[in-house]
Length: 92
Image (cartoon, rainbow, N blue to C red):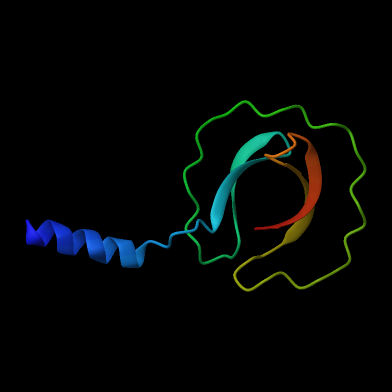
């Protein structure tokens, strides 16, 4: 019984309490979005995303992608609070 408790304590220390990755609708498809490239993305459940409204992407100033990412672009990401799509910089 103590072994189970010890394993539980070790897992609690390894797994962070707050998620650095979340599943969001991006350009009409569910995909994981992470704060940085070393986070392990979750497996996102298939979900029907809302239709992406036609919109012109904002001008994205050239910037070097963060460490571990090869490119960044402006993408429409659905805001879970409002249900509306918003332009955000997404790096892959």
